[in-house]
Amino acid sequence: MNYRYLPMTEQDKKGMLETIGVHSIDELFSNIPEEVRFKGSLKLKAPLAEHELMKEFTRLAGLNKDLKANVSFLGAGIYDHYIPVIVDHVISRSEFYTAYTPYQPEISQGELQAIFEFQTMICELTGMDVANSSMYDGGTALAEAAALSAGQTNRNKVLISKAVHPEYRTVLETYARGQHLEVIEIDIENGKTDLADLKNKMSEDVACFIVQYPNFFGQIEALKEIEEIIHANKAMFVVSSNPLALGLLTPPGEFGADIVIGDVQVFGIPAQFGGPHCGYFAVTKKLMRKVPGRLIGQTVDEDGKRGFVLTLQAREQHIRREKATSNICSNQALNALAAAVAMTALGKKGLKEMALQNVAKAQYAKKKLEEAGFNSPYTGSFFNEFVIDCGKSVKEINENLLQKGIIGGYDLGNDYAELSGHMLVAVTELRTKEEIDLFAREMEGYHA
Image (cartoon, rainbow, N blue to C red; front, side, top):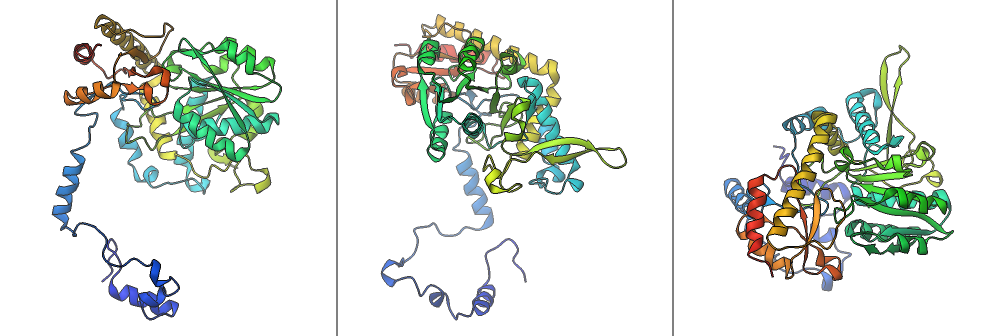
């Protein structure tokens, strides 16, 4: 009998040992000194019957604080958005669910077309000329943008605003060590990039400046003024952008951005323990041969019928290693498909309406929290996130809120010492007036 889903049998073990020419497991590991071998049994629970194991997993799953049983005001890069039912239906189809990557274009036309449509919609949202099929997430897309900029300009300094997501900046630091790049952070003024500090730190060896739009605090950065400073020094202008916000805001491409990157978790990808996600990477036409990952192109076959192909590959798996511009060695095709289906289901009008609701509901929540006695240190325009000064431990507040079925905002003291006691509140289109009012009432009890 073949045990397809169970560990190997004793007969299987015996057959493998005979094949490699040893008589026992001990003989197989005879080269490992006795003094470093583990003696005894691992401290593991006894095995359970299948029904008992399912019961245990159900119990453990019940310990999670999910977004179905709790009202969430937590954002900071992962958001609770509406996901059309059709998304799960489409991505669960076997031709998409099992199609890891389209290496054989002649039999992967559905997968290739889906990715092509994803690229097209990203270009429309960002105002850029070319977009790739997908990156791991927004953080790696940002780091790849810095690497591309350094290679394109032959410069080794990367400037990045402190108002960019802290985790994205950490990923950049990791990439920079391997690329021998110097990362310099630009200070914040009133929740946005300090343009005076940016001007002071610009120099002839700066490859690019990276800004987030809307930024980590939800504030809308002044891209027009920033672009003038960057391009006056012949550096590259990189914008990390929430694609949902681009349903309402002027796209970075219209401000002269060279590279626009971000994360499409906001479209059809649930908040699931921090991943998996799907990043996007869009550039101007002059940079299209330097884009990491895959690009899908549209063409016609010998009979004149429309078809899709892999094109302009920048990674070492497809071209000579010395010509490769990236070592991104996979893609997030299934999540890119989810995002494409979500954007298609929403349509242009629906996406704009969704973005408008984020703004309106966040404005309402800010007003209710101000009435409850909480002030924001920042006065600029914002999208669906804003900062409030709690005047006390945010961790303590969030622990109490969780007992009431509310997931509170992000504790900014985790990443910004000067913002200890400040909370980053996210309000999406899914939050109702009743939920926002409840949050404000519960918060009122914690006002210092």
